[in-house]
Image 1 (tube, rainbow, N blue to C red):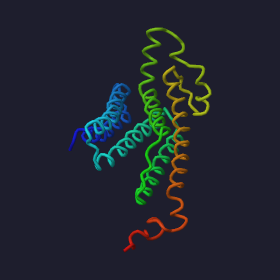
Image 2: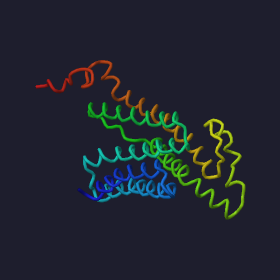
Image 3: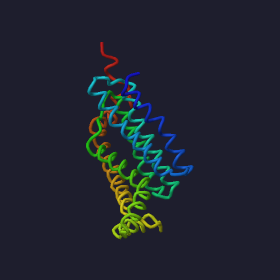
Image 4: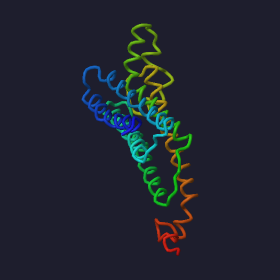
Length: 227
């Protein structure tokens, strides 16, 4: 196993640790959970970077990398529901999008077509990582800064009042927690947007085969019967 695949495997192994830390609410769970989440997120960057730099891209890596990303984000978001930091309906839409895109990607692969991730999907992942980071570690950081500075902005952020009402929560928000809630909305919008773009790309490349029944999905591949 090469180094990029090892980093991907480490990211997968960090997922259950993150869930246990956050859901059992061990002492300093927010700090420990943030460190675990950041460590896993860093491996997401370096496994791809090292694989490209040293030309160690493998089939196993292509399979494990997106799986590890989805497991990490899903584990963090579900844990945030338990911590009452984000609503279940929002997490459901985001995770449903991931499952739908995974299914479409599998269908496209069956037809021998690869649809790469676009910039919207990358921004979506970045917004999710930033939102989760703010929601996990934000309360601690806001508390520290409020104690050190006494500034009300770290105790209750007026700009986030709308989001508090939309999420049906009465918990006072500080600056970083407020940013986290706003970034969750941003990631939700990007998730829906990227899903629409991906489906349009999928239909443009595969739709004609489905309608005519000439592809592997709805009929027999005509290339298999060529002499």
